[in-house]
Structure formats: structure tokens, C-alpha cells
Length: 377
Image 1 (spheres, rainbow, N blue to C red):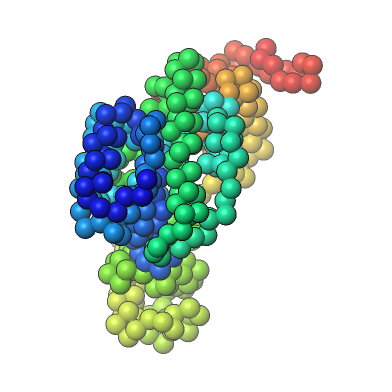
Image 2: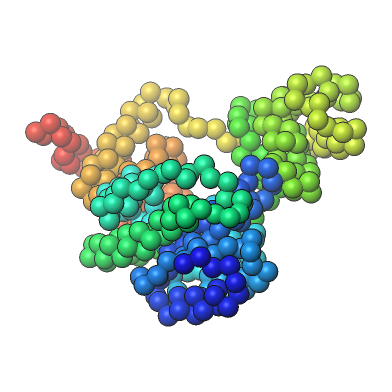
């Protein structure tokens, strides 16, 4: 079903609201804009599938109401980008939600399983990817494009039913709900300009003072990119931003000597220099905390972490929960220093592995090799 009129949208949303769960996916473009541009919304119930064309609709309020309906679970696969674009385009944050990529990790699949991989694993279907580079803003869409878009939800609702049944049988629905909860929070999708520097590539290679400069430059870049509705890298790239933070320019001539700044207007240069100056004058108490990987610690600490990771992999194998969703090596290093603040001491992680990790570090249990595999002593 291709929906491009308000009566059709209203009728479909009314029917969909009668179901406990619906599958949702989006197609969008963001190569030339700051915010992603919503081009299509795909939705599926156990009875029907629909492609909703927001570019043809002046009023999408029935869809917004459906996405906010507390009685209907919205099923996504790798939901973050879909949630972001729906929030920006429709002004709503879908809830409640279920993310099949997260859920599959509790059933023996790798954490970052693709949608194709999910459909193959839980529906036994291999999907084509012939339309993966489609410009979804162009109209009219071909029948092949519509079918491709529908595949993204047609099998998602089927996979959800299988996943929900298996999770329920293993008593893990609560575990998945806890893991998905942060993805339902608005702050996960609204950019704080003052925190944008944390996503800049190689920013952790900078000193605290240099990071303060990067923080100011990144905040300016966010505001400028949003105002112009262009990708942030079109203002300045991460590479240029780090270079400016590493050697803060004092004059316009200093700044323009850095490659990748030719596109900046005189006003841009003036505001960027002001941002650099704020960073260089930042009081010591307000400097960012340098966050670096804990890798490269002492050999003794690395050896303990290796032992902990071996236990983690053993628990993962026995439980069928992906190792990566339980903890990383850096998480284990943090657990040694501050176990009371570790996620391994809370919720499903503590139930799954926390007590074993405590016993391992206390010397109450050990690991040995038996029949070519690791076993707990």
C-alpha cells in the first residue's frame, strides 16, 4: 500500500492502532543537510504493510499520534537514526519501542547484526539490496523501490514475533527492556552543542587545554551548520578542527593558513577566532576531562583483564548473550577500579555475570582448560 493522502493515512493508522505492535522503518537523506530529511516511512502490522510518503502529505498528524500511542509497541531495527529523523520531522519521539538489533544480541546473534542478517536468522529469508543507494527524495518511486522499502518492515514484524517468543521463553524480555530504555530518552537524539566536541575524531589525542578549544570550536560549528542546514563537515572538517585546537590561531591570517578553511567567510573566521580565544582562556577548573582508552595499562592489570574477559566470553557462550553487549575490555578495567559504579553491578548484567566476576577477583573461583575449552574451577 502506497499512502499519499490524508484519508488513506488516517484509515491505515486507525487500523494499525488496533495491534499490540507495528514495525517501523524510515528512508531519509542527510548528505547535504544538517538534519536528516525524511523521505518515506514504512509501517507494517501482522495484516498489512504500507509506505507512507511524507513529501506528498501536508498533514502527518495521524502518523505522529500512532507513534506516540502508548498501547502500541513500535518495532525498529537499529532504531537510533529512525528515532532521530522522526523526532525532527514529526516532533514526536516514538514510544514504547522495541529494537530487534539489541534484542537479537540476547539470543546468540552478534551485537551489530544487519537487518538482512536478522531476517535470514529469524525468518529464513535472504533479501536483495539492489535499492540501497536510492535517492528516496525523487518522485515518482518505481514499483521496485516501493517493494524494497516494504521489505524493511514486511519481515521485521515477523522477526519480532519470533524474537519476542524466544525471549519470553528464556525470561529475558526484561533484560532487553532495560537495554533499550536509554534509546527512548530525548537527550539521546538532541545534540548539546557543548558536548559536540566529544564526537570529533581524534579529540582524545588533545590535551585538556586543547580540548577546551575544540569544545568551543565544535559548539560554534554545530550552530553554524544548523543555521545553514548543511553538514557540519562543510563548515570545517574534524581534521581541521583538531588542527586548530592543537595550534590555536590568534589572527585571521593564522587561521587561514590551515588547509580546509578557504570556504570560511570573514565573519566565520571572526567568530571562530573568538571561540578559540574562549577555549584558551578557559579556567583550569572548567577544562574538559581527557577521556582515553585504558588500554596499555600495566602488564599485571592487562593480565587480570585478560582473565576477566575469558570469563566473560565463557558466560556469553553459555548464555547466548553477545559478549559485546555485556561489557568491553575498558568496562572490565573500570570494574577493577570502581566496581560500585559499573553496569556489571546492576540489572541483568549483574544477574548474568556480576557475581561470577566478583568471585573471580576475590580468588573464590578460577578458570582452567578442559577438552580444549575454558571451564570454571
